[in-house]
Length: 346
Image (cartoon, rainbow, N blue to C red; front, side, top):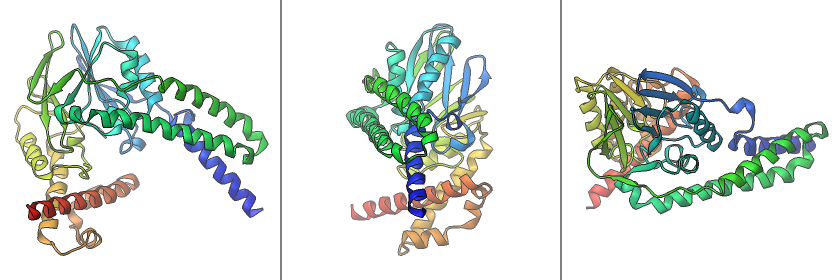
């Protein structure tokens, strides 16, 4: 009996995985929250429970054109957003901006491009150089979905009979969505950013800047005379530093904190921020680089244990923050240690 129950639990787990990945389980699918920043800017905030797993989006609309910043890694959610935009937009969606190459910001562009084929994809020059890798990442992700569905069908016989019809219907819907997404492609960028670029959306201008901070190919957007910053994952309150250019990232934080015009900061994950709140992620990144510098002989495990408690303490107020901050800290220490080793080898 123990083995049989174990098999049922395992089967249900795999079925749930397939359906969750494809967003067909109602409890795991919910729309982003639309927040009006001003008459031209909507901040589409991700659910709190998914804030470290999926991204926010920002919609900017002028009198002639609209621009969408980032897309979810949840392709069903991107399809829903595309349908919502058809009802909400008063102007054509002219531009799609990927703030960097991570899956939860870029890959959903394939879905959005299918709905809005005339929208021009804008990326950092570094992302453009490696764009074939991200096109492959899109198909690889769909391959993972397909394997999960296949495994779920194999396990269906082990699910209690009264549950099988429900799960079979979910898997059929998952297959239909997968087949549809396999027809999509991540289209080539149309605008490559290697220097600051201003775009007029019709009585409302935005300026796009290339950065190297969270990754080596970030984009930020400023508007409203410099009072609003759309910073992607660069300005997350709990930043992921595993791919970061840590020194230039810290310098960018200091620039934002000292910017007298800046009042509203829209991050890639979590809620809106103030300049004062940016002092916490700056402290986190600074402590990582200084800790590695001052403890050259310590292993990553030792560095984790000896890391200043005062820096990590603000992230320990909630379970998801605790889990994520420990993972992010380890990634940041690895990044800082490898960067230091590379510099020493030069």
